[in-house]
Length: 585
Image (cartoon, rainbow, N blue to C red; front, side, top):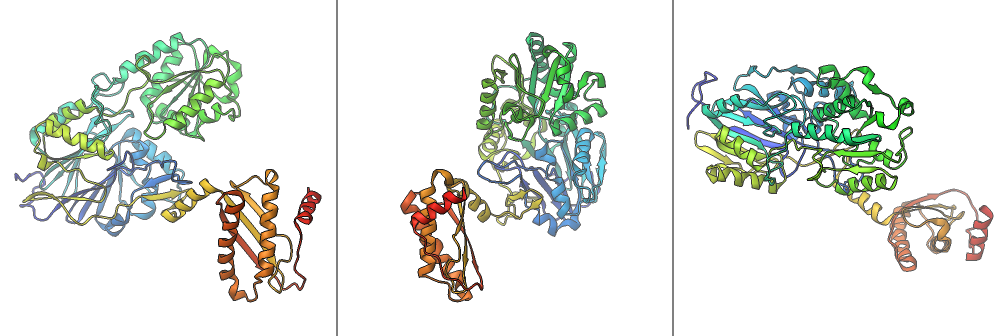
């Protein structure tokens, strides 16, 4: 193998290690690591949004345990671009791992700064790299090349190592008529001519055969659509897609429309975009929510979050009639300038149905309405990247398994040796040395870490399983107070959540109370030490009884209190219990 001389080092010894802590077998949670001797470089720190079966979980982040153990080796975190699946995990990483610097550029750096305002106690040092810059470390030289993506200032990264160049494309597409800056195709060709040791490349659209639609084409379609619409326009798109947002604002201005921005993330991105010059609009072009009735419908555009049907996003609240000031009116047109993230289609369909029921015309991406373009390369564009860089080794990243496998097949079609292509999973370590490349048998910890609110890793599988059971069966809580002799002192209290509605099932709850009273009259808790044993036995028996009388199987929670009050136990009949209920009501 040819040894690179860029680092002015003697013949290298030891292993160059490359692995992912997130981003493989999944679309999101991107985090890749390059390690040689006593230095570690990290590429991206993203989150993954949970599926519906992860009840109460806000985000999923990578397992940082390896980085915690080896944080003395870390030289920096390098950010390819500002999407949440690449920067969303930064606050959680910084809480646990000492990162000397975060290297980011332009819009990505601004988004990170904005994000860290919500974490005032977490220290962060951001270094804004220049795209022509070469950052030198003991064992590495890091350089950058601009790529086209659905967010400004997206970059690929080249890491020169003692064995050769390790290149990651980041998220990219080949767009020859972008609305922003061109990708640096000259630098890509130069790297390919020089020789790339290992390529890590975006696999998200590996199954898509058609060439990606250009943002310029989408911009023209949006302008045509805006000219045709006579009523109010509501547009939902990804808040981070600044180029698209600028297109929508420009189209609004051209058609004498004022722009109302709603949704926290959308408001933040628009402000940052305006500050950095990516969104070219004046203050007079915008209105706030309180001014919405001051203008006729054909002079208003509403930019909203909620393109993925998120229940708390602005568009969902508008669709449900729960937004304080924005209500759907006859003649409204709602445009979804986005594509559905896998798994989100049911939520999006629900929002579309709610909007349609209220009289809105809904426009979604289709063959007849090109109002969105993917930011990811199709298979033909992925092949072009492979041809430009001509890597010796290839590791497809950022995608589900079938995406990685399809991307690997494209590399073979481009003439790569199948033995030099590595489809890995998170935690698997690719080692490159003088002998070649291989995958180590021992993996690095890379389990998914669940974030519940601000609690990082505090929710385990058992808790999620409990939440899943509760969502399916409901919960019944019984509060039982015993006298000194361990028998019922007063009527039990029953609390039903997601089980049965009490007022519609009075007989069932009355029977449960009678069963409970009789049970403890016949099985008094004689000693405090017997409390736990009696509770578990009772829970089993009452669960069997409930299954028998109503064919339900709720999760049962028992609160058992024993007092020092000396009083005879109660022996109510069913009629007495029913009468007591009526008196209470």
